[in-house]
Structure formats: C-alpha cells, structure tokens
Amino acid sequence: MAADWQRTTESSSGDTFYMDFSSVASVGAYRKAWVQINHQNQLETDGYPKKKYQTSRMLYYFDCEGKMLSTFQTVRYAEKFAGGDVIESKSFKFNPKDLEDAVPDTVGETVMITACSSNAERAKIKARNNAELADLLKRLKALKSEDDSGARRAEKVRDDSTSSL
Image (tube, rainbow, N blue to C red; front, side):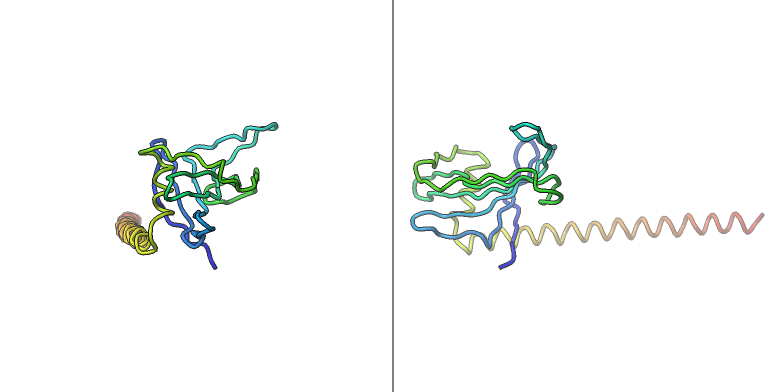
C-alpha cells in the first residue's frame, strides 16, 4: 500500500509532523504508526562524525489506553520530505516496558491521539488537509496569473517604447 502522509501538527519551533495514515495498525494491545518530522532547521546526529539532516522518520508504538508511547525505529534523511541520502538509521526491539507517558499538551500527545483515533477521525484530518491544499493551490494560481499579467503589461510597455524609437 502506498504511503498516505498527512500533516498532523507543528511544533513551536516550526517543525512539521506528518503521519502515514496507511501505516496505522493494531499490534495486539498496541497501535503503531510511522511519523515524519520535517525539521525547520538542519539538525546534526549525536554520533561522530556529525552529519546534518532535515527529516526524521520514526516508527512509534502507542498504548492508547495507558496514554503511552515510544519510538522503536528512526531513519534520518539529508533533505526535507525524506529526500537525499539516508544519514542515520536505528532500530530497537519493541518492549512495552520502554513506553513512556505522553506529556500533556505536546506534539507527542497530539501524535498519539491521532494514531489512536478512529478511521473516521483520521479521514476528517485528511479532508481538512486536502481543503487547505486546494485553497493554497488556488491562491498560487491567482498569484501566477497576476504575475503573468504584469509581465505581459511590462512586455507591451517595452515593445511600445522600442517601436517609438
């Protein structure tokens, strides 16, 4: 199944979080989902040598009833939207003892709530994202039309001024 990345939230530092809605699945008493973070600024890996990255993809596991979560796989990419080279990849074996409480009013809690929500709730998020995208495309087309009109007027003025010479 193709990935279905949907914007879920944004951090106070401007990092944008996406969840692959097609990856949300139940695993026994838990849920799992892939989350992607497009970092506003380039970050560096912890190890040596330091390497710069702008996207992190993480496989989260959630205990929806206990409101707990943890990451068990992380892949870091050089460019936004998982572009460029893989800079770093780490995996950990899932162990429920590694789950931690979701901190209230944080990005982590928002990600957990999204993963633990029903398919109908995630469909609403997708519809909202699609409406926002359609509105953005409409505004971009209007700006391009204004730019094209301005360029045609400038070309006409230039043509008129050169023909009068």
